[in-house]
Image (tube, rainbow over all chains, first blue to last red; front, side, top):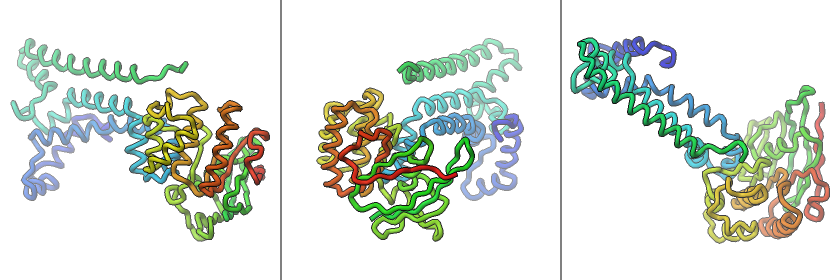
Length: 176
Length: 208
């Protein structure tokens, strides 16, 4: 669902779910003294829920592209599915794994709707760069907006180029 | 004694076909399996290894039931521990030659012996990508042997080897099979390839 739901809708439902007034939020606050709404922890949790499908998709697809005989060979050597996953399958999707991690991270870095809903816009607590851009523009402070935007642009640019270079170095030529 | 009586449905362009095998194999025997393409030779090996389940049938190895569809008994591939040489080798791209064998066995002396037999000692630190087709095939054979299997299943294991290497390897393998007292099944399309190695034959053809 997080793939197709508008981020603000997902954020709204998470805000309701983790509200300390009732339900899960109330229980978490009373039992573990944890409050996810308008806190940094809540912001991280919401981002994980929102971004997880963007990570799972490429990893699942990479695993499906591995020949079935790799896992089968491992099973005939007496290895369990867990050992096979950790020692054979996972190491052989390293480029896809790295791509998924980096792109999901970059995607989360620029997240706006979910973060604003669950975290609010509390300076030094839950104000993230993407919200700060919006805030600065609203306050007509274009210099600050430009700084935040440039920062986000540079981080994501470096990450994407890094992944591109890593994958190119690991890609096999079709003529090999 | 390995007693096999199985029926497995196969998908084919011409519709549905059945792989039916009903035969006993003596312990320590080496059986050559042949038959037309698509007849189910590879599927037969995978049924023995537990990688594919038959629709009906029983497989017994020394009175231990591996499969009995009527009683819903199916031993996992891990419990059967058959050595399997895959047609596409199924080598692990992330592991070196040495690591392949160490993944299968902890016996350092046995690993060294296998490396010598397969003439891969000097390539022990190489990953499959940097091995020739013949070297990859030898590694696939060594990895299957590393677990000292009671049953060894080989799917066209010598197809990428030159004549001299094939002859040398076969003579070494004969000694090893004898030492391990392994029952061996080898799929081959080349009638001359296994001359003098196999003592039994199994023709596999489908039934519509």
